[in-house]
Length: 474
Image 1 (cartoon, one colour):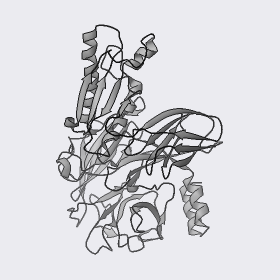
Image 2: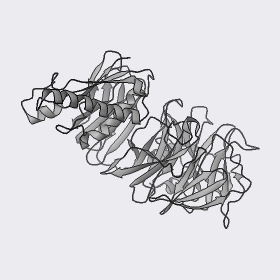
Image 3: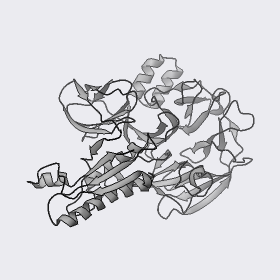
């Protein structure tokens, strides 16, 4: 069922539970994009989905440092993986460079009281700027978007005469400027915060609000009689919402998926997740029982046939629906525990017991998914996605200290292997420090071939011995 038909049913007052379930089953979370220690919001992709731009704030790597309200950052997709974020320093300032959206050729920013247009291909050339009449942009909390026709902007900020804190306003494009901002009215705005407005279609607005006093959640509303000042009563989305605190919502260029940025408690950083359309197949119910006392976290399930699902951990027994029998990668992320990443073969509805390792002083963890090429400090291509999982260690206890221990197999000169193993540990340290981890919290050691975990009697085992381990030492 598409969203327009779904919204028509709402207007006809058919029971909401049936409508909502039918619509929300069409979407699942695919996977978190490359994790980043700092806030990620307002994500957009270009037409062939090879480039992703997003905003980051409270980021010491922004042009204006930690207090910089927003910079634009870039990821490039190579071999179906997103590269590490790059600050678009050639266009960013120390002020609020707010992403509004993209089209076939351009992306759009709000800076001060102007809408700026840039080419969405390297080099990112400045094209034009247009003033929003009567708008003085001196607000710290501001969010918004531009529609796909690039002639309507919705913004959220605390203006004069607002109904509460941040309200939603709109502006329409004239010849070479934008009209004065107009409030979307009391049917949409409340005495609480309304944030991140995104026009899904010509008459359907998605946004985030804390008006129900149950945290920040996703809502939608439909304009009445094509009037942006009169809207239906907002309805909370069910499956697109999580137990976490949502901050922004947008779509990829081809409108095949949503990008939602959320934080689990409004105090930790915001990460971007992708909600992708799924066609329903013969499904199998999987029950995951955790031996640990988990009260929060995320379970990601994926398979080679492009099935992805994601659920929040509510208690120690979580149920998740998978497409069909086959091999599935199960990834469990929970604060204060090492990420569990394992492969399971599923052939029927079943219950599986899992256990996570606590992040605490004296714990040593083999990074079995991170391997190096022989006689090299180069991480194998298969290992690259697992480097990002290390950032999870530093998202909880900020005082955490670690020792990164490098190892080699027994091939070659002993002293050279000692040197090589330390250099491999330094590669891991550099990755962490490049992504914001305090270098003083990381020590490195190189043991060469002196502490093998596996017999060096085969190339397969030698690959396993070319490894890195991490020891918690806070």
